[in-house]
Length: 248
Image 1 (cartoon, rainbow, N blue to C red):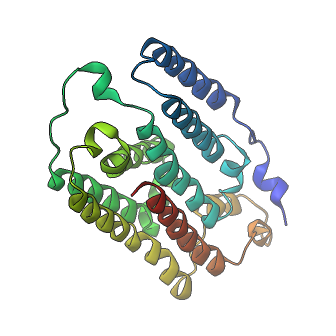
Image 2 (cartoon, rainbow, N blue to C red):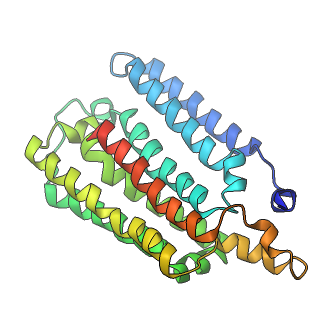
């Protein structure tokens, strides 16, 4: 198993990302102290946890090893969209800070539109042709990941962002929770079903293998491809379900 070759030249712990996220925590701490009557310790803890999850997903060895396994790559994305996004929303009572008035009511249709935009983009990302195209263009891939993260904030806002959650009725929240669960299923089922009918490899592994001597490609396979892909879809469902149980 040529895992050393896979990780060669990659920084296992991203110092620049650590410094950037630490700077965000310091800035947040400043506003936390300034508006201590509005913020609570839960807000600060949620923000620090959100930054920690982002660093775990994209600044730790997980980011490097996820290049070799679709399952770990999907865990990386699930941590960003299903764990850090709701934690980040929990840390910002923005409207109560900026304006001393009740937030305008958010219609359920707008919330569902935001949810389905995320579900659509999330499904498209998992199409092999789209994933390979994005992997070929680093800037485009980064932009797509950021777009999904922004959309995920809208998806979790009805449950985790206090100014919005307080304006929606329980019945509407239940409807949004139902469609939230349904929305991510197509992408997960695409991976699970595809594991039995195709042999999809991580696009990054494919690029790495193309640069290796003939016959050495298999040294990059840490798990059987079909099992890796099945595990990716299953882990995505489990992490999303755990987040729904926590927040919805």
